[in-house]
Image (cartoon, rainbow, N blue to C red; front, side):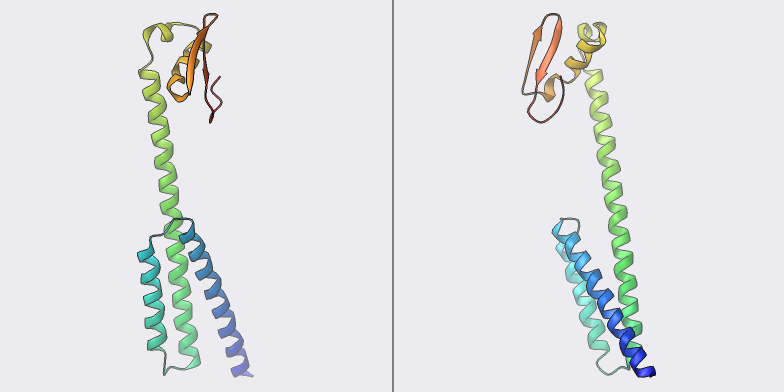
Length: 145
């Protein structure tokens, strides 16, 4: 009975490990991981399996659990790096908006709000024109009118 429970636990551990590896592969396909990290992980898996050639079932379960914990920590690290990248992108967008406001011409800064906003987005647009005392811009990828 105990052997059957250990075998079921081993199968569950292997299933969790396969799911974690598939999730890691998905992250790799999304270009969030360098290929070197995946190779390092595969090398670690090979070393664990080589170390466990003559070990008991319980030792194998413990090694698989250690590998799963390592994978979870690695994915947590990747998520934190992704969040840091998103925060950096947000900061760059904020700096870009500040530069737009600083580079506005004095006439656009003293004009009404709609004209100033249109002038601020002028270089985002494919082309940009002045009509009826207002600036209008057309861009194919944003809503800047």
